[in-house]
Length: 126
Image (cartoon, rainbow, N blue to C red; front, side, top):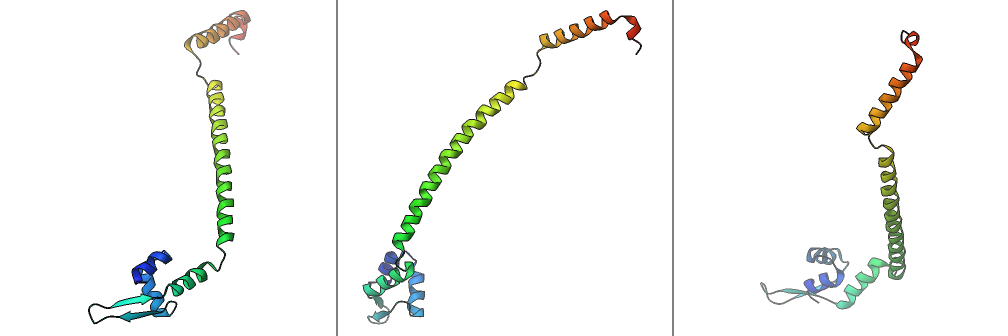
């Protein structure tokens, strides 16, 4: 494999493959005359790096991803239910805090005036 092919197989950059080669994590052979050299890497070396990277826990990790995906879906459904409940609560609050209309205000003032008139002048000085 070339460095480019190894990078694609490992899902890393070519620069990372060169670091692996320098560190000994991968082994490769440089062939060709100066100016046309290529470094070739054995596919078995790439597979060993890939297997060593996940330690064989791919199945466990996939199961965890699936579990977390299900949990996220449940949380999204709960969020949507809460949004609906919040919208209904806001509508209820808005109905409770409707501003008093002019007519209702006039009726309250008329009622207060009527009460004041019934109480008479002796209560007016208090």
